[in-house]
Amino acid sequence: MTALLDVTGLRVAFGGKDVVKGIDFSIAAGEKLALVGESGSGKTVTALSLLGLAANAHCRGTARFALDTGSVDLLAMPEPDLRAIRGRDIAMIFQEPMTALNPLFPVGNQIAEVLQLKQGLDKAACAKAVVDLLASTGIPDPARRAQAFPHQLSGGQRQRAMIAMALACKPRLLLADEPTTALDVTVRAQILELLAELQREYGMAVLMITHDLNLVRKFADRVAVMEQGALVEHGTVAAVFADPQHAYTRKLIDSRPVRDVDEIAPDAAPVGPPLLEAADVSVAYPVPVPGVRGWFRKGAFVAVKGASFRITPGRTLGVIGESGSGKSTLALAALGLQPFDGELRVTGQPWGRDKALDKSLRRKVQVVFQDPFSSLSPRMTVEEIVGEGLLVHQPASSRAERQQRVLQALAEVGLDERQFPNLLSRYPHEFSGGQRQRLAVARALIVEPQLLVLDEPTSALDVTIQQQVLRLLQSLQRQRRLSYLLITHDVDVIRAMAHDVLVMKDGEIVEAGPLAQVLDAPRHPYTRALVASVA
Image (cartoon, rainbow, N blue to C red; front, side, top):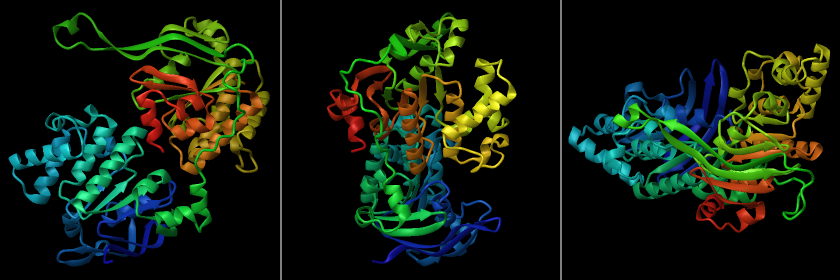
């Protein structure tokens, strides 16, 4: 089969250091190739280099691309010639549509710009083509949505708008860089189906950049695995997944979350009183009222509606739902950081009503946030970050006592000075994503809490690092009999960690119960859709 794109000996260097190290691959017309690897493997840089979009990069090798007029080398083309190919013959879907789309212009204008520049269509023809393109991606009311700014669209709608822009000129090759990573699981499945449908309709080839092996199984024909800039394995999806030859490929395939928790019978009597009890908890945010009425009063958006649950010692309550379902708002209320109606109790005492009482209870409830890089102060050392809770809850302790406690907490999460010399004086940027999340866990553990609120604790991590962090949390739960309130949109993480599950949609709990009951025999259509999206 003749190759549409044939890449040979591709090397990409920044500042004299190779980050892509002489890789070879090809894509035939109409084929779907997945380029798989963890962050830093070089897969995104590989795609960007093909279109000359890798800033300050020095590229070597060849990338032969078949045009109607003959084959060209993308890496050797002058910028004006390469600019003519971008968007017309080769298009790209970027990872995060909110940052890739211009916030100052309606999405319809941004799509029309491609049609004007690449196809020379007039204003009326562009307007019609934009509506048709948005309609082809499944956006409801496309004429109205074309006038919307990016921030006025949901994550799934923004991604669909970007797909419409990429497909405006019906390219021969589509480069899709993590096109579903920022999306909820049900929206992710919809986008994947949409891409497959449009790929068949247009007959284009797709180079999919991803670390999601479940996505690769469902979408790609062939897979190429990258590790630290090198291509370590490639072949058909069926062959590679059935019999991986390279150790790194086996590691990726085996990196799905594994359940390793103390099983507790659903009807077993709880050991001790509930650590956290919620009774009819609701959270509302003020919103402006349009028109003259808005001069005199504010409206309200109810983000959580009448939530009730309890968490007992040693158990994990998993809260699952898509973005906007209210699960993170519920977590903020459980932390005493968000005003609410209803009743919350921590170890039987009222919570979120009295600042003095809340402070004495706060050491019992700690939190690990989603993104460890943004939740750790870049100006504080490891010693200051991890030991900060002791200054608040044990102010009488000496500097030497605090330092010893910090070292113990770090050792408990797998960080020590043998591995990291001068550990206490280091800063967060000197650690990897998984190591930073371990620092966040150590910071929460140092005051010896009974309940941890875990807000998407692994969603910002690669699959192998995700597995390590989950194993750490499982081990800590067994050792300390910790309880977790786990907020996530990942069904696999829920299966690995939770004893009980709440399913939230539009601020309401639509289904609740033990793990097996909710996920293996779901009653609500929304729960069934969540489970089916990862099957």
